[in-house]
Length: 296
Image (cartoon, rainbow, N blue to C red):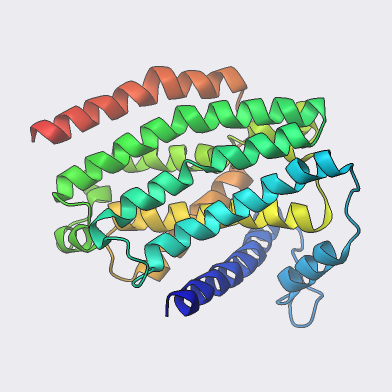
């Protein structure tokens, strides 16, 4: 039963990612006054499957055996961390206490830095190494604040259990009662997932494409899938923490649409502005909110 549940979870996540990319490209086409995917089969519905087939069948880069091991390990670790996050939440037969699932998911999310390390170092490129430095520094600075905001919501609900969060938010949503926390949380989620306007680790103007500049074919597909899987995961966690558990699929889709809207609307910020926002503004705000939550 455990293997069947894990398999169904992985298949569901991968299909969700495929069609989320299609929705993103369609919405970006509408917002930019251009055509999105509209050729493959009916209105481009099978475009994600065609893109995946193209990437997975292309020839990959051939390095020496020593370099190739680390070069391939990075995308595989990133994909595995993303699937483990979804699997740790969805398991009912995995032996994970339902009360501790959220903490297990957060602990697994923190391992994503290792995939970035392997990708940036194993690429043997200065651009990739600089992009890796930026990514890891960005991840560390924002993950601390993410955890603190999550603890604020969990302490407000009085439990680490997702069911308790949904029961507490039956009459009112935490997102409405604490709108500044929700908006700051969304900013953190975009920075955590390397999305515009915080995609400084992939800055085309100065780093070509950052830590994934040397990747193509199937390994690039792994990086792409892991990034979009984490976007959907963060949208799901946002829904559970701030918007209650009713109609959860619709709410998760709405939150994920915010990522697309921000990408289409805002330019990339400067690196020093991003880091100063993390350490000088958001970190004191999150510590203050956590202290207030503990007192109340």
